[in-house]
Each structure stands twice: as structure tokens, then as C-alpha cells.
Image 1 (spheres, helix red, strand yellow):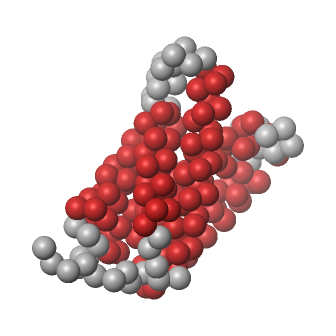
Image 2 (image 1 turned 180 degrees about the horizontal axis):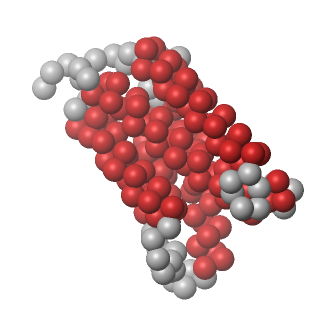
Length: 166
């Protein structure tokens, strides 16, 4: 049991939160590429991404795994994104720092989605049973390149209205 839920129920909840994080993150990144910042989608993305990472640590794992490492990196990246957005209000270099960290957080979620898809989806698993075969590496490389391009374009185009100094 995890937080009073069966492992199966907790896993389903974790997956649902992760998928909401990815979907809302895609909406946020597309908006950044278009130059805007949808506040409610941004808050949903950041909240669900933090919940995804934190809930991943609650699974009964007996040793350090790449998934735990990804969770640690994600939480560090998210902490910087939250400081940039809510603490520094995207002023000066905090604008591009926020964009880079938000895109990186989404990329890490998608990275885990790809790994889990090749592990758990019946028709994908035979294509990369060890997680190092060409289809898996191609999927990871395409995702990385896509997020690098999206990140660069978002850094260039994302110019939210500057808040007035306090």
C-alpha cells in the first residue's frame, strides 16, 4: 500500500497525473512558442509535473534507479522554473531560464513516457526489449531534437508582458 492505496491504484493515479502533466506541458510550450503564457495551464503543468516526480519516489524501490535519478533532476529543474516564474517574475535572464527549465521538465516527462511505453506497451516492447535497440534510441533522439528546437524557438519568441516593479 502507498498512501492508503493499493500499488495498482497508486500506479494508475501516478500515470494519470503524469499524462495530465505532459498534455498541459505541451499546451504551455506551444503557447511559449507563440509568445504567450497561459497562467492556468502553466500552473497545472508545474503542479502535476512536481506531483509526478514526487509520487515516483513513493513506489517501493529498493535501490537507486535511472527513474529515481530522472526524478531528482526533474525536481531540481522544476525548482528553478518555479523561482524564475513566481519568485523572479520572468524579469531579465529569468525569462529564458524559465523557458529552458520548463521545456526541460516536459522533456524529462516525455523521456519517461517513451521508456515506459517501450517497457509496457505490447507492440513496442518487442522492438526494444533491452531498451538500447535502434527503435528505442531513435524515439529518444527524435524527442530530444524536437525539444531542443522547441526550446530554442520558445526562448526567442516567449516575451510575456513584463510585470510592474513592486
